[in-house]
Length: 343
Image (cartoon, rainbow, N blue to C red; front, top):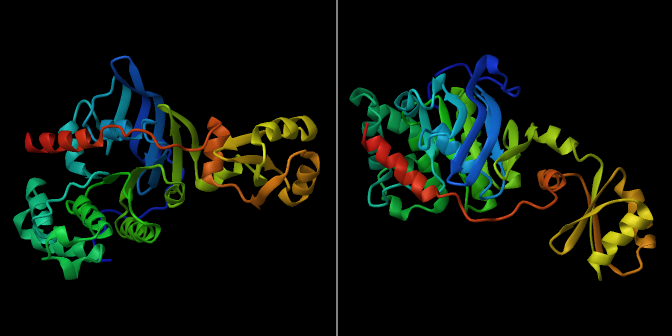
């Protein structure tokens, strides 16, 4: 890595207010009668990778839009890099990087030209532009494609270039809205490898939203949000410990009747997840024989595994994480461009 650290890298997991770079208290955002964010509180420490995990429509992008000063909160307070989102939006915009879920690169320009345009827009001194662009391209392994048109890039390469653009002006906080949406698992892992290296090298704070459970595992801490409310917050291991024990997943010839029989004969609640049932037990291997003996209908398949973040979400909300309509990210991107141009 070649970026010069803006501050010593820190292992930040507590998220307390002593060294918080993001603080949110009682944040509410309404659209008419619709309350998209319902009084959330959180604190993100400097140098932390913080994840907002939840389904589309849960309030993730609305929250990130408020923090990036693209939307004004209806109630509550929020600050980024020590600045209030209402009182000093320009100051915040100068101190953050933002990578949208929707593509925002000019595909008719080269990678280098995209970065140069960004450097000019953010007021990077002319004497530093060449070096910073070279550093950013090296950071995301795109030096050999610096002068290639972005239209020839794969989805993963475009996402890496957008991350390079987001860190080019040396922000204190990098906001990522669904950063690996649509990428295959291997490319997603590569993107996260670069992000963690950037954090280790520069001490950058990363605030990201996602509905991918496996992606959330990369975060130091996670806030699970659903219907505009934070329902759990902690490290991935702390959240999974809320489930505890083992997860038994099974499907039967009659799942609806199986739920009743499991509750009545074994005293255990089975949750419906699509065409399967999930059961939380202390010892899965000991429970499965009892389960099969107790059911009157045939068991088609059964597996035992350790808890995942998906199990945490299911336990807290009573359903698996879902795909819903998005939260207007195209409008978010357009608003950001308009505000940058109006500075």
